[in-house]
Image (tube, rainbow, N blue to C red; front, side, top):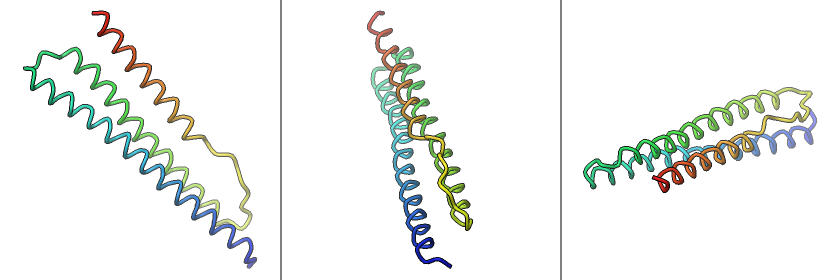
Length: 126
């Protein structure tokens, strides 16, 4: 047993754990934001007598997109974490490039932003 290698693997396990925890926080925020957005708009709609059906539909779409993005990112981060731990248990551990979940999440959030902007523009035009 090579102590240097074992200590390096422990650092990598710790880093993988911290990364997963960061993804948990990020995904929980996305899911909570989507859920909260839907609930707030529902409460506003009830307060004005249910006259905002068009607005509610668009906001529900954006809220669902946030929630789905959070779920997919969490699933991807969990799979990546488990694969990394399996690889760390091997004696011949070698760094390999991984799928970039952060970049995919950023693209999804950009698309949600474009969708939201489109809904705002459509509402302003009507």
